[in-house]
Image 1 (tube, helix red, strand yellow):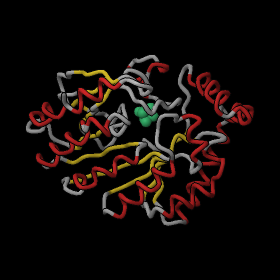
Image 2: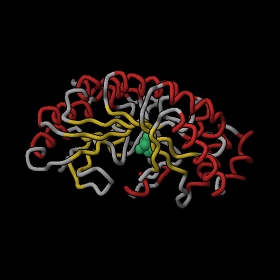
Image 3: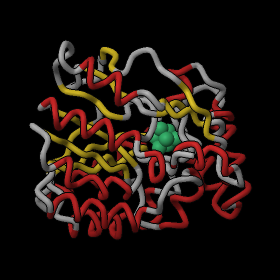
Length: 278
Ligand code: SF4
């Protein structure tokens, strides 16, 4: 039995992993700076309450963190497609390529190996420190850019809406490891969320400056249908004492304008180039 078969048979409390044979590895991408999209998994066990991907993938948002589909043949398809599809590959445009299953399945790692072989350029975004495992491959890419999402420096606040993701304390260490390895690294500071991002704003700013990252991209929370209700439920369960404050600010444009202006000034003072997302 292979590692993959053993992992899929384990069951337990983690989301079920479903084997999927895909017919294409690379698809065209319209995201800025990307030519192609590569997603080794469908759905995401990080299960962020504010995730926009279910709306793009037409999956009911409450099912997004369950029944993760692992595209078990993706690296083999990729090796064939890279010869005729050229450009910057966005790795993980509608999933996290380093969600928990990746620690055992190595689908993302196998894709990176193919891209190293083909001389490809890659840009990826993750919430997991598991990306550090693949620094050896990222250093060998023609060009590699890694974004790590961090919207608070307080682990307990991150857990309110990102129940399945590694805590920001680990992500900050990963940013530092990537920077020290010479990988092009940025922090995606988003979405900015009331009672989460502003819980210790100066602590977040100093933590980011300490990583020596040179680039931060900021985005506000953009509510989609049903999202506020799911966020309300998550906060009622995990942080009821801040629910009222959250609800008073979640729709307040002034909150987002002020906090983003403050972040931009303070991060720029720390020598970081700040940009708006997309
Ligand atoms: S890590 Fe990204 S893709 Fe995964 S649930 Fe969170 S926002 Fe969605």
